[in-house]
Length: 267
Image (cartoon, rainbow, N blue to C red; front, top):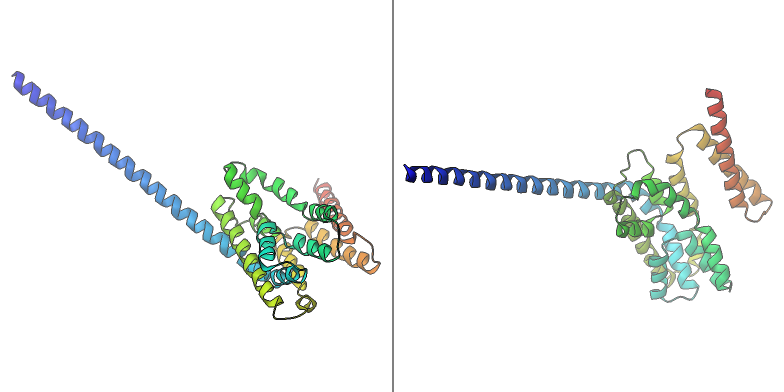
């Protein structure tokens, strides 16, 4: 009888062990399945980010060629020009700083000009803070480097994801495009004289039109854009210094006033 009880207890113990092992296997399979789904989802988001910013990446071609050629014409070596494009990664700042270098401006003047010229990135970062504050500090550093007007515009679309894989895919695609087109400009500058006289800077205006138009979602933003364009033309005609900045401030003020007027009318 004692032997039978021991055999029965041993059998029950074996069943429990087998059940526990089965549960562990099920948990492992579930974990692997979730990991696989997460990786698949990240890959899809990365690819979607690349596709969404691809039109803007292609549109920056003339701008990148202009930046690369200007760097060579300013007396930089190919290595220095490439380092400038890949490290600074700010088209407007790069073009303006090269112009200042060619005009023998002081280092302080260049630094202050570039600082104010790129100050909008602070606004972009503050706007995106709620979406990326849960990222690790390494990922936030990557986003800080890849953040551009184009990436911010893409991230603000209704269909855009705020996950790291999407933003990284979009930012990396634009960064690589900028570097490739800058190198192309460096190569062309050595074979085509006076490349900067071909008015490739038209792409700057065209690119910002591509960025701004999808963001016009209501009457207030439309009024802001139209007022800005009108005042840019006026200030340009009268050769007023800092006219673009003043026009932008006027446009933003008009957009805010229009939005307040709409809210007052609804009440």
